[in-house]
Image (cartoon, rainbow, N blue to C red; front, side):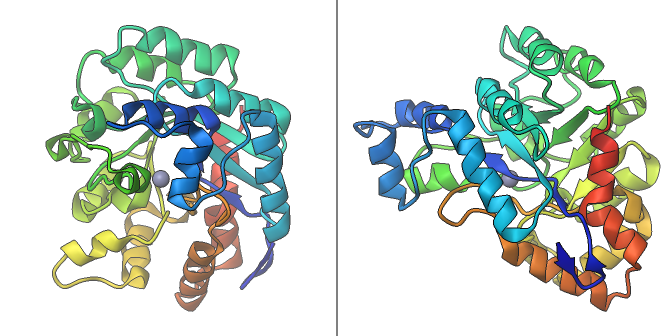
Length: 306
Ligand SMILES: [Zn+2]
């Protein structure tokens, strides 16, 4: 892909797979369920995903081609949807890495996680402690982390402010618990599991200082840069995104920052504006071509190597 540093292979560390079954699960949560998935998605003004995940994968691959993106994570974005990510990866393993979301409190969490890593070949376990109201230090999380302790696997832990746009648009309740979202809680866990690599999205989504503290102490934690990073408005004074990058680079270094777009739905598709903003900022900061290659794809490729 063409970047301020010339041609670089770009890999995206944060994108959601909004599959047919993802929307079907949301539909069932509606007080007055839409007639079907197509009706629900039409109500959002989005393009309904094909029921066949291989066809959805083809839609994504064409989108990556259109922008010159080499590869992206596709994250199954609701517990129980790991098969959709597996189908997409199987359809095109050259272009996708599959991540999956698990609720560690569910009775089948360990078996689901084992199957997702070992049988489905997925590579990222996504934990959203605020969403299901558990502590990342809960003993029920430990066996999941043990399964993730292998090359080519990561644990994605959402911290900070959590708002799920699609739930909001559908008027679904989001009874989350922000007291479970402090990255400081992850410190003890990351120290106890040095063989597990953790990724925190959006620079900690508001807990920027805490996220920097964690990264300074734990070399097995990386950050993704995804989305608009509107959490900056919680800080006084509000930093620019350039200042956020500068400080994150100072503590984490270029080897632990992963570019992410947070793309999800069609017809928007791959959210190029995030790439344009962030690549222009990093070029302005004088980031070297070598560091840019790491941030915009090399780091993810290294973490995903089995
Ligand atoms: Zn996201």
